[in-house]
Image 1 (cartoon, rainbow, N blue to C red):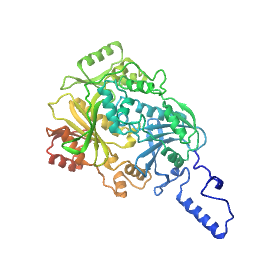
Image 2: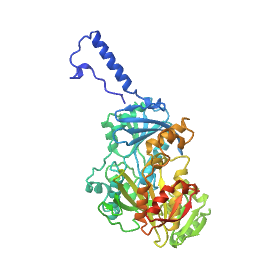
Image 3: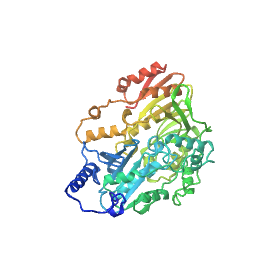
Image 4: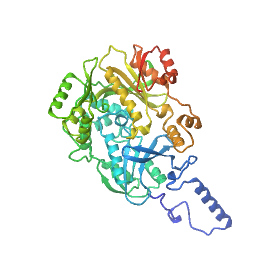
Amino acid sequence: MDSAPSVTPGDDPFVGPIVPLNGDARKLVDRTREILHRTIHEPGSAFTQDIADSPTRGATVSLGSLTLELKQGTFRAHAFESLTDRSHIIALSKGDITTEDPLLIRVHSECITSETLGGCDCDCVEQLEGALQAIADEGRGVVFYLRQEGRGAGYSLKGRDRMMVCASENEVETFEAYKELGLAPDERRYERLRDVSYLLGIQAPLKVMTNNPDKIAGLESLGFVVEDRRPLTIDPNPHNAYYLNTKGQNGHMLGENGTSSTVAGYPWKVETFAPHRLPDALRFSHNASYPLPIRPMEGALVLSPEDFYALQDLQAEGEAPLVHSVEGLSFGKFRVQLTEAALKMMQEDPKSSLAQFVGHRPHWFNDHIYHDSVTGLDFVALTYAERDDIVPLVRVHSENLLDRFPLADEDETTKYQQSIDAIVSHGRGMLLLYPEDGRGKGFSSTFLERRLVEEGHATNSTEASQMLGLGDDRRDYDALAQLILHHCPEGRIRLIFTSQASIERKKPFLDLLKELGVDVEGYEFLQ
């Protein structure tokens, strides 16, 4: 894409007729050009910036780049921040993206439920990982990751959409729900991609990975040259099949294998409600609650007796052992760990009977969404209740936005999955997702911290935080404590911490819980 359209004086009514310049006028023109040259960054300047540079185009500023080791190989993560609303775009690049050869790209909108929470009621995470693999195979390309949750409407409104769809038992589809909420079918905007492309030096025609023709039209309306469309076909599962069928009926080009007639129901009756403030925590508006199917930790299932017997029947059909271990749980179900051979079998044949069996049995959590009027952020509380007569397990989980990508090092993702597994096996609990990166410091801060460490300006994240003038933990524990009390009014909980060292580090949080009358009766540790 060109850096800017060329304009001749005759084209511009504000320039007027061309006249010879005298010496003083020439000096003024030269001075003006010098000022503009110093003010405007060159195309591709995001690739050459050092830690003191801040390449800017329009309202978009580059935060620099990091090396990101993904399951699909080594990528470069370029981060950009808006000066108007502080939203972010991440560009994951591979190879030389500044040449004029057609460039393979994906414009991807964030999805908290599938990329962070492990939900399987959409195809977003599969599209993200499929696009990254396609770029890795080609050796060159970019995924533009935009913070436009819920087709640009935000998570609170996406949650209200999901609540309406679930309450209607799929009689109301997502686009109808958006209309009832007073929203356009798609609220996403792509204008900032022009600034990002300028700063990255992208000038090639594009090969766009998408099933959505409106996305192609949106890019072309901004001046991008789209040479080709590449489909991203995802095999549906019973929990996202209705959503994919709806997209197909509304113009998405999914192909013959992109839809399915096998649609799962919901585990409980969903009741809709109007947004309302919590009487015991007035800063929060409760905007939505709906059932979210979450993928189990790899190879770990919680099965009813009937499902356990069905798994034994599958075992009888084959030769390789499927079950590594079985644990009886206090609420009448079994926790089953599959063998490595079983996992390999599902990986090699995703449509096998075993893979279908596992795919039909997610963990069902109630996904509650609260908008905090103090910070303007959406808090998520995932609750699970097979029993109501035991002390709930509670985990406060803070993510880093980069953890949403399929990292080769899955440490943080594993902590989340371990927490979900612990809550399900216990029979009652809650996971609170803190909505700001890096212990409340925000994505820009944590990205700059990682840059400082990667480029050798700091030895660790604590030192990098100090260089940025930040504390190590800026989470709003008052907000978290209020939500915990709201969901656990009996005032008794057990906390899931990463390690025993967390007890001392979280003392301010524990003191707040005590002040609110919440008794922490014990801890479970992930390490």
